Amino acid sequence: MMQFHKLIATALGVGYLPVAPGTWGALLAFVITWLLHIYGYLSNPLLIILVIVFTLLGTIASHKLKDEWGKDPSITVIDEVVGYWITLVFVPFHLYTFIAAFILFRIFDISKPLFIRKLEELPYGFGVMADDLLAGIYANICLQILVISLLSKWI
Image (cartoon, rainbow, N blue to C red; front, side, top):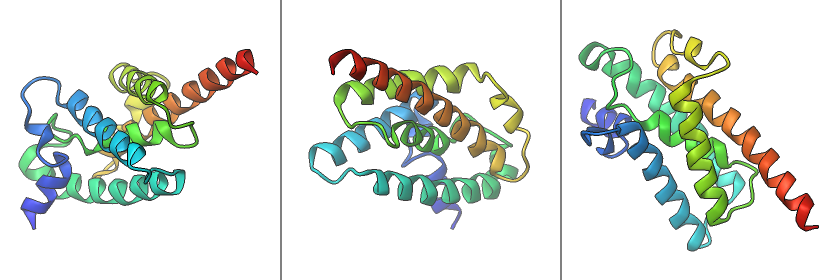
């Protein structure tokens, strides 16, 4: 069972990449989402289901691995995957929005403004996941504003 938790926490092993594992985790989410989009499977209900399922799995895996890996090790990147997916909820699916979502999410995830860092203190596996969930929410709000402002110029 611990192998399953490690597979989830590292997002299929991406977290083991040596440089910037969080960026690789978000990039994995980008690729998965893009593939779902180009093959016609991506929808907001699917994104919401993925966010819920992998938030639960990531929280459990982070909690189970805490004694072995520590509270929030850099190899745990499932939180970046979920945070990226949150950034895209209710946003038009287009290559440009996927790229903007990646950039905005990484900015919020790395800089951790507006109480994001405080969420890392939550117990069990919640702290590992919660900061990236909020970073995804903030990035989503910014992306929504960007999309609306650009669309208003074209309409």
